[in-house]
Amino acid sequence: MTAETGDVLSGLKIGEKARVAGFDLPPEHRQRLLEMGLTVGAEFEVVRFAPMGDPIDIKVRGYHLSLRKKEASGVRVTRL
Image (cartoon, rainbow, N blue to C red; front, side, top):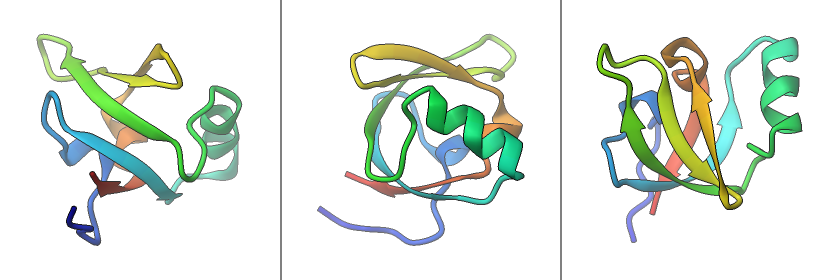
């Protein structure tokens, strides 16, 4: 396993797995993601991108979550 620093969720490819390392988002956006289960340390997999690339569908904690690219670019990750 390699831990690459500076990675963000929006930079991952379909099928890649990662762990949430932190957030660079306004408090209200961060809180919304935390309430949906995307917490620091949570592991997830990128499932698909919408045809125009936005939103991004990930699988976290056994369910699918769709995120806009703008939100996903504020989620720091560690690739697994």
